[in-house]
Structure formats: C-alpha cells, structure tokens
Length: 147
Image 1 (cartoon, helix red, strand yellow):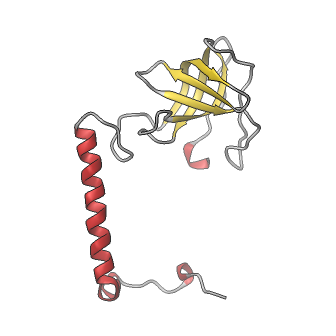
Image 2 (cartoon, helix red, strand yellow):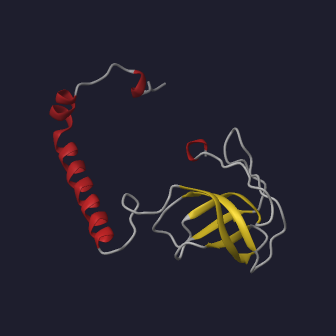
Image 3 (cartoon, rainbow, N blue to C red):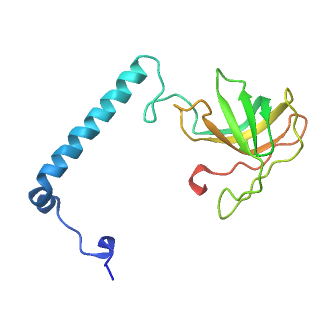
C-alpha cells in the first residue's frame, strides 16, 4: 500500500522550494489575495472568516426562538443580528459530551444557551450546544476544541 507521507523523514524547506518552487509561489500568491479580500471586506464593516468581532463561544447567552420544526430550532440572539441553530435530533457533539438541552421550546419563547461560532459570514453564525428555559439553571458548556 501507499506510505503515509506524515510518517516519513522531515523535508527541509529549501528542498521543497527547489522541487515545488512554482507551486509554492502560486499558493503563496493565492493565499495573499484571499487575505487581502477578507481584509477589504472587514475594513468595509463586513464579516470575514479570519477577521470578525464575534465571540468564538457563547456561555449562558440569551435569545428568542424565532423558528422551529422537527429537525432544528433557530434562536435570534440578543446581540445585534446574530442567530444560532440547534439540531433537535439526538447527536453527540464530541466523544466526551452529548447535547445537554432540555425543554420543548415554542416560537417567541426566551431561552438561555451555550453555542460555538461556526462561520461569521453565514446568516446563522452559531451552533447551539445546550439550550434551556431562561428560568432554569445554566448548563455545561462544551469546549470548541472537542467538537
């Protein structure tokens, strides 16, 4: 079978540059252009994956249920125009922690939640990792690096 290159001996950058010089130069050019586009978007008050001011994790945040069906729950967060999505089907977020939500929420209901940032450019920026009624006690927050 094929050997995994990650198990081989390290290759010095000078060797890579000699063997893959044109590809590395093109990759560098494309990367710089992508960062420039994101910087331009951010400087014009837009959101970009590398440049944004959203928190990576929300612990005990507040919001209002704005949509619900059999599969998902959509919550409008109290901050600006941010949204979070909860998958209502039984799932494991990580190998250590399962979803820790409770309740049968209705549209217009105020809820508390824990969530992780998925993509600041999307209309729904966060994934809910725990959701409960505002009057209940807080729930465990799932660390982003375990999802």
